Length: 401
Image (cartoon, rainbow, N blue to C red; front, side, top):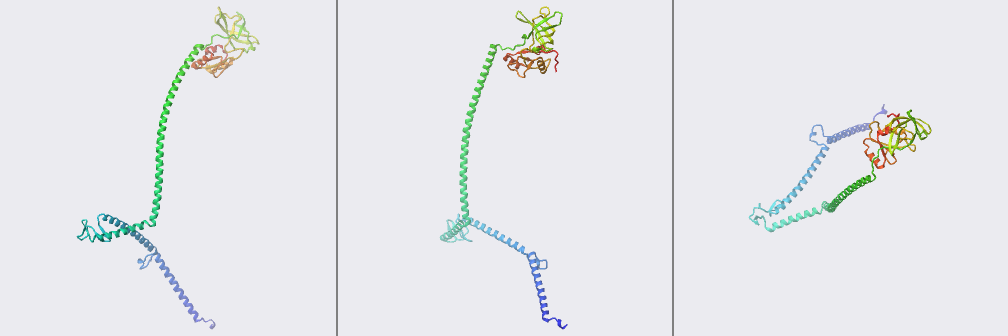
């Protein structure tokens, strides 16, 4: 046990170390508390009078702002005093600081132009000159300052811009004046051209009216010279003849057959010429055909006593031709059949139907409201037929749609 005895110096060192650690910890805690109270304010007794660092900075900024405001107010007041001094100088009221050199409020009996003086005239003049010199030096310092030089450059630039603006405005005014002048000139030219146009249109209308009247007169003259009248179908052209007639039989034989494109159901008109006059005798219908001849059934005889059907009578049909098919154009409104039915009758009888009236058409089938086509047929010298005439010569076995 005696070998493990603790040395007294070691114990003393440990004690000192503990004491030093405690003291250091206390100081750290105390300083931390002080810093916290300085930043955030204390919470214990006596903390009400202590201010935080943030508040001190805020107070400092507020005081600096107040100082700046005060300096601005001083400058404003100085400018006001300077303006007041200038205004008083107009009335020979002079001051040097707070001392009145001359004016209505000076107590002396001395006067200057009826106003009391506090001192001699040369003193007043000296102080006035000194004050003026001081004012001029202040103004010169202000004029030679950097801010004033910047203002000078700015004023020069502003003046240049103003000069440029005035030049632009002048050009604009010149252009507006030129524009107004051009507009006035163009307006005058437009009025002149409008008058000339109206005059030319009037002349053209008069010339057109004269020409139209002349054309109408010439057309009327041409019609009268050529006797352009619409010719309605009256006489037929012979297509064949009657070969044999039996008084006791209702049939007869003609000299046209299947070789001539004759088919059963075809209707022929029988006619003859009496002293050069066309005489209609009656109608026959083909019932049987051979190559060169056909047998026909007598449909009617107009005057069997005076003009009976006889050998060598002529036969004809305006819709049928042995040489070439007849060409038709149907126009207008009809009472018995419609336009399509009439066109079908013509085609099935052997004719051709056109959709336009033009030269080359043989017959115009004219109904109501076909005046324009009748005028064209008159001009083209085309014969016209009525609906009743057409139905007389088409095949009777056909039925309308």
